[in-house]
Length: 420
Image (cartoon, rainbow, N blue to C red; front, side, top):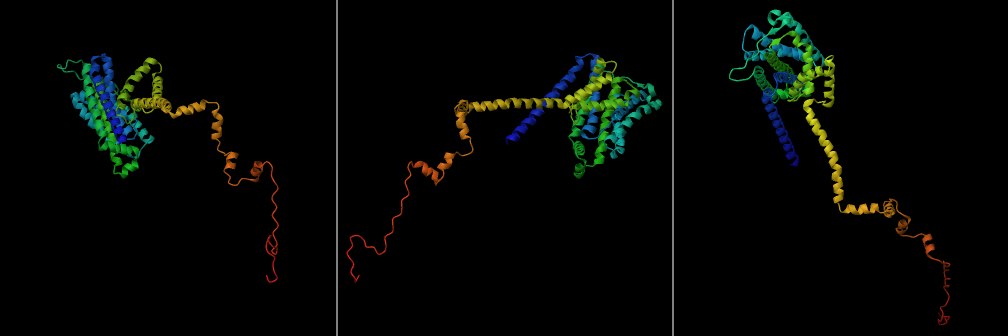
């Protein structure tokens, strides 16, 4: 019963801690654009849209157990879908979002079918090939994509009633899209599809025995991942207002995967932390070394993974566990000393141990072998040596008396007659 109560208390504390963390993050997100400079607001906006892309990649890699190095290609597909609609067809910004999401979902669904026969490094190689050949393809489709020059589109303008600047309005729009996307990812993981993805990741054979269709859920993992990447790419077009093939090289795919691993795989907070890492660390590396920022970026990744092997999302739990273990080690000896000091019988033992004369008694009492006196006292038949040692002047053994003859008369008896 006590174990159940302790478990319930732990779950309640964990939920309360998660609720307080979400409340603090929401308060910071709402108040941030009013206290930061426009460029810093732009950086926060980029963090939010990268978090959407990493949330989709987390569904595929963290919860689905598959690997993809072509996530930047789906990101580029969503960005170019929004750019073409805004430039060629003069549609509204919000109208491009569902089209980009649906188009990337179908693209991921079609790409996931041939990837069913591949896994591990082979799947990673195929997805990397998709990310490599897409930028040259976009350059070839110059009538639609603008070729190497790219496309320039208008950014969303704030309405007059809002009283916000352009960067602030864009930030709040992206914040709303990010909140909806992360909530959708959370609900998706708690649904039947999410449980099936976890079963496939842990053990494909066991999942298939339980009735999970491996082909369907693996394909859906690619489709959902591509959908989130397409939404992120569409929002990227809104924020930047310009797209070109060189902006979506295969380096983007590798950077997104590195950001997810650093942030924390299979974690709901991992995409946000990974997006912040992807956005801020390259600029920090550029400030440290303008000649070789890539070297500094790589060293920072190595340092983070050495300190937090499970990602930044698991760093807090790792620190709490280490602190709890150290606290347990320090409190256990102190508790033992308190118990000994509170025991009334321990004082006598301490006095005996401090008495120098008691050592012989302790040694004698601790001797497992019995002494000679103990053996002699316990012997029921004493030996001849013991008898001899107890008699100071031993006497000669008594001689037996001569037996009387059978015909001898007793003394004082009357004489016998012949008749007798």
